[in-house]
Image (tube, one colour):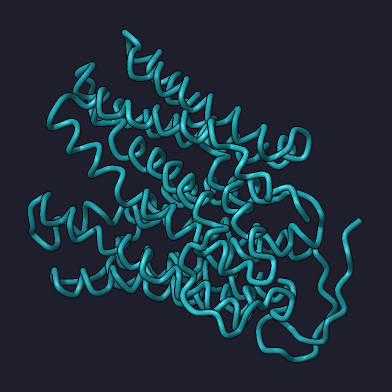
Length: 397
């Protein structure tokens, strides 16, 4: 049964407010995950627009885009320490608000230096929000004594798809600048309202004297598995459409369906992942998911026609979708006195994999071929399946 909380401290300002319950907090943090997916999806139409506005080549622009990931990876360990000091609810409020504001920078930057600087700021706020909302999701999961992390990440995936469609439509009908302000306004209003229903900040304050949330002996194993999981996710999302276009000589729009099938598989499996984790346990879920990811990606790489390849990517997405949420949940439980630090350490390594994976695939593809290079994602999935027992901590409440 969900525990009712009667703390006087409110997550936003510490003042005496109405009672918060884990059930309310569950839907509040679900909404926050959805919003963060929405704003990231809304960023997608700005990528080609920014490249055209800045007037740079694909190589330079690709390096400029790395600033977003670099900002996130740098900020995540710092955020883990801040969560230990102030609590995940307050950090979710602060960083989510900053994320919506900093989103405006890269979308409107007139020069390359301003773009890079604003992309670093946006990435830092994005990564910090990611750590904060995941840490609070773990706090709610502990209070409910039920798995909810996969569902939260499913909300993010749904939000990303909605954001991409909504963002593209707004750019088309009201213009790029108006789209930025509309999306930011929607995000801010709903985000501030949702934060009022989060659990108190005092609930998961950890070791106030802890420093950067670097991986410890407790979290290094899960962090490395998360590195591999997000390396797979990032590599397939970046290179799948290119492989389809090269292998089957498809139009760019048709080739991009590979991304759609993969992302759709991820969203579907995340929305059922909590039920599966509760029924079969984290270790069994991660093992089966990793095997499915390896099987689906293998089918996609060797299939003789486009539709079988799409089916392979769908299967791969169904497999990969639940890996990161369960690994994040395990990271937050390995350090019970400082869950924010634990999850920040795991997510930092995970996002490092997301950052390193696509360039690694490109380098290996240059030496061999793209299908051979993407075979590394199959190997990574098999390694995760072999060492899945490391995630058993995710089932402790």
